[in-house]
Amino acid sequence: KAGVTQTPRYLIKTRGQQVTLSCSPISGHRSVSWYQQTPGQGLQFLFEYFSETQRNKGNFPGRFSGRQFSNSRSEMNVSTLELGDSALYLCASADPGLVNEQFFGPGTRLTVL
Amino acid sequence: AQSVSQHNHHVILSEAASLELGCNYSYGGTVNLFWYVQYPGQHLQLLLKYFSGDPLVKGIKGFEAEFIKSKFSFNLRKPSVQWSDTAEYFCAVADLSGGSYIPTFGRGTSLIVHP
Image (cartoon, rainbow over all chains, first blue to last red; front, side):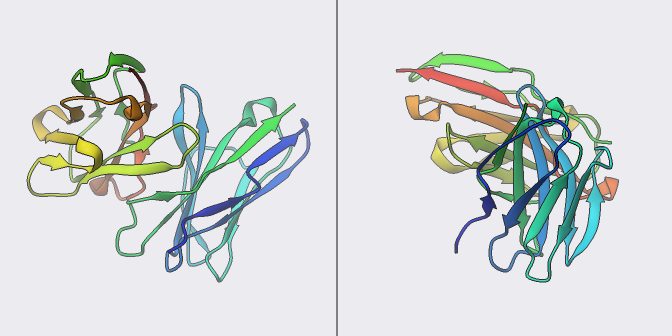
């Protein structure tokens, strides 16, 4: 099976702009989660989608949003970018029967200037 | 909410040395426990997991971890590290009794192994 894929791999944006990141889960996985990874903070959970519905949400401001499509692909959007949003954004998918065992993609490295 | 502490942020070892990385979570209940590894330039990948049963869990590449419920701990061990074990290691806990199965991750431990 192909793994989790994320596009783009790298992005450079300026403050105030918005960005959309994409994630394609492993075939058959319907749960998609997003994490922000920064040095010293580890992985912080953003949100989880299952069957096009947001099932869980972390403690991030409303500038961070997401959605999931009927084919389980997911997008994450960050509006009004701030310097502190610079991070590696990871997408993870999970099998419906083992929803807390996450399979991670390579991440999108976002740099905000 | 559950929190996860990884006591060692940076560990430097020589090849063949023994490794133990600490992981503690904040409170009990039914938990699923994980260790993930991120090699330089690669994806996060699962090293081992504990759901139930034998508290001593064996994973890939010679790693093992022991779940000690009374200490809320899930420490990772390897008797003899190799240069190729240089990576970042993350402990994660899914607190099933808390109603959310989404794992909470620790801040990670960076391991450097000198040849």
